[in-house]
Image (cartoon, rainbow over all chains, first blue to last red):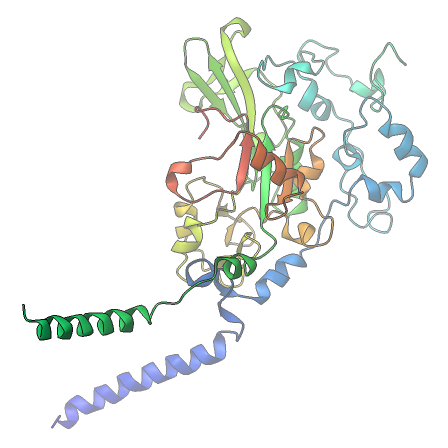
Amino acid sequence: MLKPHVWRPLFVVIGIVVLILLFRMVYVPSDFGVQERGYTFGYHRLSNEQEWKQFPGKYKDSNYCNDCHEEKVASLNASQHGMIPCENCHGAAMNHPENPEQLAIDRSRELCIRCHSRLYMPSSDRNDIPGILPAEHNVGIECSECHNPHNPSLEEM
Amino acid sequence: MKRRDFLKNTAVFVSGVSASVAALEWLDPQKVLASRSDLRWGFLVDTHKCVGCGFCVKACKVENDIPVEANVTRTWVERYVIKKDGKVLMDSPKGALNGFTSEDIDQNQSGMKKVADEEIAQAFFVPKLCNHCDTPACVQVCPVGATYQAADGVVLVDRKWCIGCGYCIMGCPYGVRFFHPIENVADKCTFCYHRISIGGGNTACAQACPFGARQIGNLRDPNDPVTKVVMNQRVGVLRDEYGTKPQVFYLGLNKEVH
């Protein structure tokens, strides 16, 4: 038979274990457990999937622009830069036209030279894009002062 | 051996075997295949089409509230320059947030290197993102069940459960995970779960790409354009030897790319 000086601390330990188990019951949500992908890869809180689905998006896409700016989108799609989505230069639509009411257009040289800075990339389509050397080509002025951003070839202007 | 013993032994053996075989579950292959989820997200990257503009990186950061100037990103683009003498130079300035605009290649301690055009044998860009592996190492190491794989294959992080121990960041062979500087939890590409989960949705990076170098698709749908390419063309994956079964497929992958 165990003596009281052994039993007393043992009761304390058992009490702590019971408390931890009770806390776990309250704290861990009921949808936490093994889901479709099994114990190794699918052990999670199921409602978190829904939380991620409700993450607020910022970009809409060019079809969204087309809902109001139909004529502009149609004519720009036929232009040289037609493959570039509107939001790449005009900024993410977010909740435009309510918020923001006006989108901030990026007209910087830095934006244009993302593609048009000359790099020798023989195994990439980058080589097929007309390129300039940003340090030599009309330094200090915005590209849009000479080139129409939607139809940038100077011959066709 | 006597005939009696032989019959006795045979009876014992047969009943023993049938008892243990009865414990096995017989699976009907058709039923097993039918119970598979009919949605599995996969990604296709065409390295020929990528021009290194970095619009994908910028769109990803804005879309997913990743601080734009912080030195972390869910997706990035690497530049590879392979010289005629076999030397390989690689860089990814700020993860290509502002694209590749300079011929100088960042070689860390050895400074910026410029390679003359006539020395270059091959040069190309490789976009990187989470591979949403079929057997993700990052998920296996999570001690609290905060990171997991959904039924459609997407690997996500539960921000309420992550304790920030960093095991997953170490466990990922592709280095796609990082600490979110504001949320203070592990963070990674979600395949824009909020966008693809609504019908006809596309990831922010794929949508921002003017050249169609990035595409997301359902690998269980044989008519999906991504699935068709993965099945019919010569695609590669990154670090196959790790056994993580990555689900981001690359067209035009070189052995120099890891």
